[in-house]
Length: 191
Length: 216
Image 1 (spheres, rainbow over the protein chains, first blue to last red):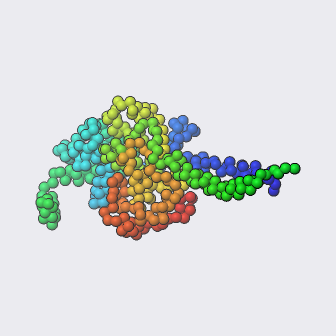
Image 2: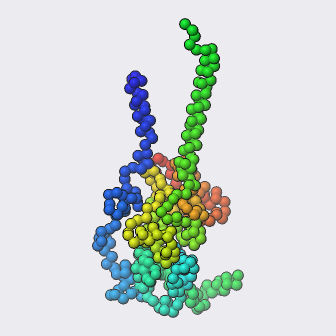
Image 3: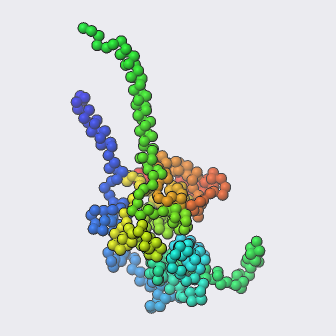
């Protein structure tokens, strides 16, 4: 091959080497922007009324916290220690900014000026059925927006279980503590 | 016919051949330096955003958990940029008239997304999944730095391949207990060597360095 042939080829190769096509391939990435769709989003909203296979959500107790229009009074999921622990973790992430770590409504966001939510330890709050708490997480209430898009259904029930645990914790007496644990508790209290 | 080359041409020729090696070498060094400089990697360069969102204020000041906004990080490859609805959970009442937050309110009114400038942008030929890194004990801070001290978001690390491999070759140097993954100020209780070695065994962390792990 003479220099006349390979020199332009080399120049061409050198030029193509500078392109970044593989860095930014012509495909959509999550939450990117698009010129094709009128709202400019890559992520497409689900068409209203869509029911995916196996997601009919016919179980109103689990998905709506209601049975025959009334709020359920007992958890539609099995109450386990793991559930409450999960609830504690999720509560601290999503709820504590306003409701506070112990549920008194003195969270950081409230201290910065958000409307004070009622303490979970008020008599009327303790009497509310669990279904009500689930409904508030799902649909929002007053100044509180819906958390349905942020917290999956099972986690919402875990949070409800933990709110109940919080309510118990602030109104517990020595009689609520198992006898075997009482000694340990008063010992820790002295420290 | 007179001489075309002066006798000094001999020296010039020798020096230029010798010099060319240094010149080429120097060029490579410069290229390398440029490639690793913040000009290319964007390390430490705060980006302009439609709203000057401060992680320092929200995470460091108020103590909001990463997952309050980045809800998908535990279950998905992408951590997720929060929808405007998430901002409005608080800003419907707090700083509700601030002109700085007008783009947020406009987005909420018109249902048009806020177009943030992406800070951590991996090339399209790299596969990456947030959820598995969290499950194996890689803290947010390990890659993203102390975001609770960043008024405006910037890249703490290069995201270069050698940087990825640094951990993939020796994960015991970086992993932490799963419960501490979201902690900003985590310090290992014992030496990282001891903790790291134990966690690598406990979480069954493999040294994934095959090309096809990330380039699939």
